[in-house]
Length: 112
Length: 114
Image (cartoon, rainbow over all chains, first blue to last red; front, side, top):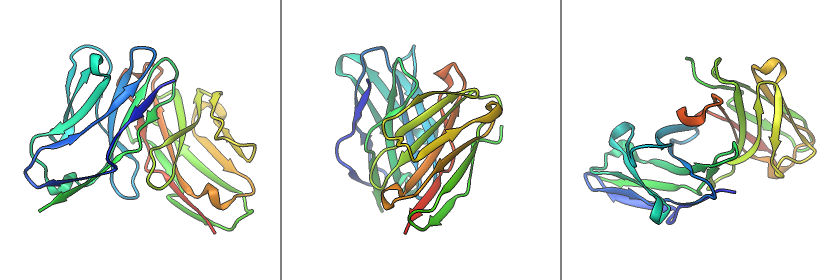
């Protein structure tokens, strides 16, 4: 079975500052990893994904994440936070089965 | 590609009533998933279909829950005798069999049981 750990349910960041959201995963097989963003009362929008190949993946809205197998991590970053980045962010993993396992999410608050 | 559609967006029901939700996946996607998300939590897997076959069900899916995907197109999720603990966002997602391209989620159905 796969699992994801996201620490710190609420993350506050100043506008223009670095956004860093941490994700550690557990998987018995090579994982596929995803970051999703969710705005209030909306579904999940895919930010980026890692399946195979290059370990640094770039996504939409200036976000990127790096797959580090040795650290079982897939942290999400954005160099400069914008007010529109305020949302909830979920890391998810899938392995040999067909289900996505999600972390508990990070609620990002951007301070002007 | 019109995305994944879910209907209704919101549903308020009295405890004990039955409710049914509908999901229309991306037309070329043969896999369809249902997830449940409660406040402050990440989505939890309920069940998934490949074409019309329901291939996996979570232990979260009690006997009061049933899902169908007739003809491998749209899917319905029915909850019988609703309980207050069923209040949640129900999310539908679809994907190709090759998961490399990822999963596309709908906007969800928010269920409130009063």
